[in-house]
Image (tube, rainbow, N blue to C red):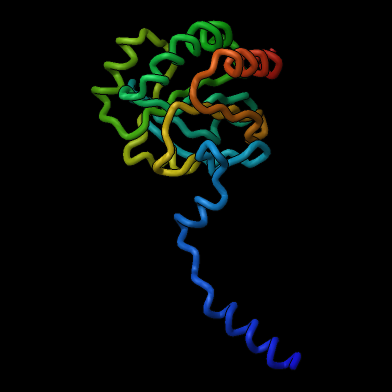
Length: 180
């Protein structure tokens, strides 16, 4: 009897469906579509800013880094960006221990540049053709706006999704405590 049960269990486990990488990602994604979590090492990437500068996340080790995933078509992003400009960037842009980088999801340089000019932000914006960088942090079908805060050791220490004034105020306070 035990031998029969063991055989059935082995057969059923052999016939179990293989999980695709997309299904695997979905199973580890949180309710906001993040595939990373606080405590994870931030996935490295290289990108080109709209001003032509090449940036690599790992080059910022030793600094606190804020990534803001955005797109010109995102109404919530456009609502949040002036707050990022005034409450985070203007306060910390001269701090050698802080980096802020917006990642524009899958748009041509013309759209990203127009967004920057229209909203009036001055912090750096990098392009993410094909949403390859975005997909390292969130499910490909997940939306923007989302922010990722990374500590000096390259570990994720804070994640936000969408714009909520109370959550944003806590986020700003947390950044202030980490870079001052």
